[in-house]
Image (tube, rainbow, N blue to C red; front, side, top):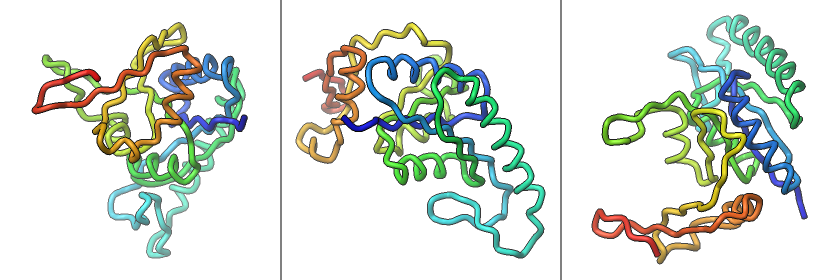
Length: 198
């Protein structure tokens, strides 16, 4: 079997630690290739490509941005070496949301694992965060963590989709995760605004 690629977007903080703990558990069941990614938020007014990555237009001196990128790469590399699961380290400058989703697609990762500072309102709706954007816009499954879930049990994985258009969804990736955690896959379709399990 080929290695499965896991992307961990992180700045090397506690949320990244949480993501690594889940990746470590997955690695006990399946062979993983881990990629750590830090996206430095680009200053306003800079030029970016369609993937949300910064382009140096040579109009201004961006030395400070490149210096920050270099420092972040050193710091993240040092942090990643301390993890029990090693991997490549990438630091890019750009729009955080678009850069992560584009990078994940370009690198053909099978799963994104990331921590979130997102909060929930009284109706338990997710309030804006990078994780929310990535979960909505990524074609790749996302495991989102708000705390240490190293002992997490994934008894069931819910796949929300339009059953008639199942071919649009790459369920191979989800099945790999389900097998690793011995999970049951539950398909969920929203009918007339009401949830209905199938």
